[in-house]
Image (tube, rainbow, N blue to C red):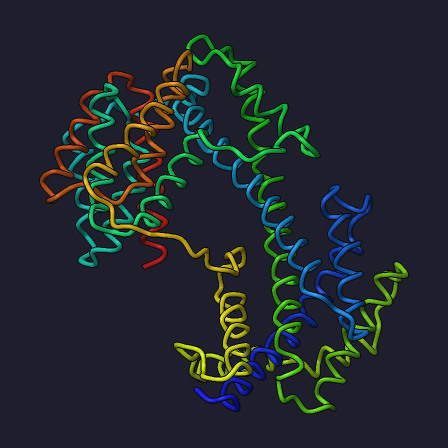
Length: 443
């Protein structure tokens, strides 16, 4: 790809990010208008720093380093929110299986179901799709809800079966799944979880200290209420952080592409005027009245975002840098822009250059040994019901480890037969049927 073609690609990126930033920034303005208290400490920090960075950009003085710093801070906040979400999903698994014990009215008059009939219903659901990807996804969702009754040795054997698919792959792929398993199992948690989120931290400690074998109705109600509070807050925070990162990413794209974007002056003036108008109102806190000027500016943006993104996709991305320094520099910027527009908002912008060997038997065995040791240490003194919740999370996160539908059927039948807690079995089946309903609605 020559220099001119790369500049066209950057131009499409600049137009797309300008239009999306202008629209999203106005949405951000409206969200800030609804904040009575200024939001969380991070929300206040983000507003202050993003306002300053956007002002620098509009003045032609923007630099990548402070924008990259804000991006890293936002990523860390999302890691904390994700960690809380992972923890509460484990405890939600536990509470779900106690629901019928504390809410017996939900099962009044419902006859006990036959294990074989339930297993047949589940298998029919799994094989009703001929798409292997859909079937595997359904198997993972069902595994997470089925009763767990494994010895540690049996569980570790299943994990080994799931991880065996990484033999011969690059170690980075194995590292990625191990990171997912450790975070989902509450082994690997980010620093700073307690800071600025005392309410969430206190709720999490209540779950950690609860005696699930001897849980009282009052404690069950308190934990359920706490879970509801935590779920709503985490949903709100994750949405806000995704939105904040989109603002950062689009400003980053503009920083990398505007000067070489070959954009018409009049068009860019419209984008700048929109951003500048909203910036001034946000800085002054002028939220009260509707602004006809802003409405007119936003109306001019209708349809542009989609059109520019289609153009960005149509233009070819070079596979390697050119021969001269200018083309090499353009190529490096395009690589970063491509990552910023990839759809993975929190993606790393620079690929870490390190050795990435193929996974052999010895390497896999060593990684499994470390993981199993960490799990055993985590489970020491932990309630059996919480351990089962962690096991369910891990198994549902692994690549499907069955070699045939007969093995799946055997697993389902054994899971149901091994569970002597009728209430738990009924809850598990209800949750699986909810999955069936959701999947049918998607179809």
